Length: 123
Image (cartoon, rainbow, N blue to C red; front, side):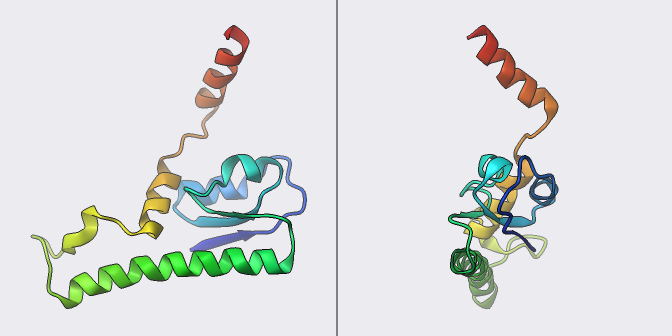
């Protein structure tokens, strides 16, 4: 799944946080809170905000998805399997799966934010 979020203005944004938590990759205009949370390792930020830039970011997202799918299909075609029917190359995730895992494990909790603020004030 992909979340397209071409907001011109977004002070924080919760939708991309929900998407990231559940492995939906965001394609978002790099503005406000989107710029802080949708980085290249977990999504596809774009700027400036325009239809051409959005299209380019969506094309990059689709290409990344297709690249990962072709790796898995290739392993299945060759019959490379581990015990339990898992493709042999699952340890070497494609770029799409790497983004999903990075997104789902990113810590956007208040505890994490408070810790960072504490370091700034003590620092």
